Length: 379
Image 1 (cartoon, rainbow, N blue to C red):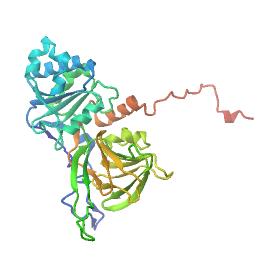
Image 2 (cartoon, rainbow, N blue to C red):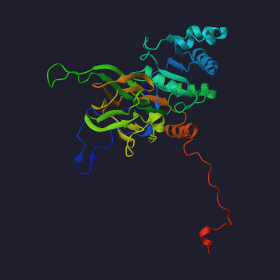
Image 3 (tube, helix red, strand yellow):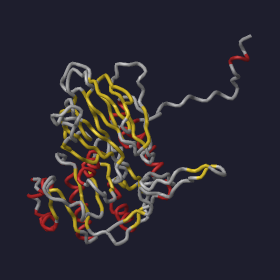
Image 4 (tube, rainbow, N blue to C red):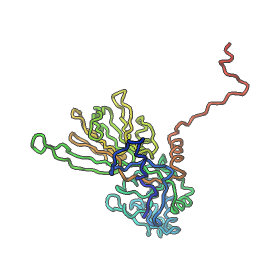
């Protein structure tokens, strides 16, 4: 089992303001401001079950995967879980030197086997997609995730594999810095306003999909040549209609993904917020906005929309949304605890510089000591 010293429910901020004003008590409140430096990992009991996620169809990861599994099984005595299709790789089944380790691995199949209640630690080998995939496997509480950069981008994968033995040993000992990456709880409701046959009466729709999203929910116009036209509600109130190529609802973690390409600001993953970013809006004044974490957003087709729209979740499970359907989005109470290489501030700015080349430019040269300002020599 495991625990986090300061989970999503941090200490309450001040609720009294001046001599007489205060906030009404709210027992349902879950999002609180906390000191980022207090986010440290600790273990109630030593970790035993480790899930190793490897990027598939990448031969360069075969050797690191074998090294890590050997280290975890033989040297650390861990019970290692691996997806069945990863172990079925020809390069592993034909390797006689790996046969002994391979027989000791516990395999599972996505969508068939539920391992969410028995994993103590997740280790990812690959790019950012491995962490997104790990998030999708855990629709409730997520174990701590340690991600090694062996992919193409590496924004969410701060560790270098060269020192994996030392880094993994440190995590097993506990007291590592973590970033609590908030997720979105998403529901797709079909036929929400299906008529019962009597005027003015409606019955609740059918929830066809409910999932946790780490990066973003994307609503777009799909293959249609028309603009998408969707209505955006916030806590039940119509805020605006989005006419354009679509809209992105993202977490702070997802602010550096599709949302950044669509012109949104980049937000540190520790900030409790939900971002709403239009995709190529047909309005010069439609700017991306940030709303408080915990509000419920709802997206529906506008009544006069010419065509349907399509929705995807972290780039997966794409489906069509028709009139009468809706997408409900709010902040999940199950974040992804991502283990930091250094700390949650340094790691994030390092990722901005390394992956996006944020504010990386050739510096202006200093003036020579004997050169005066040009304004002094004009006359």
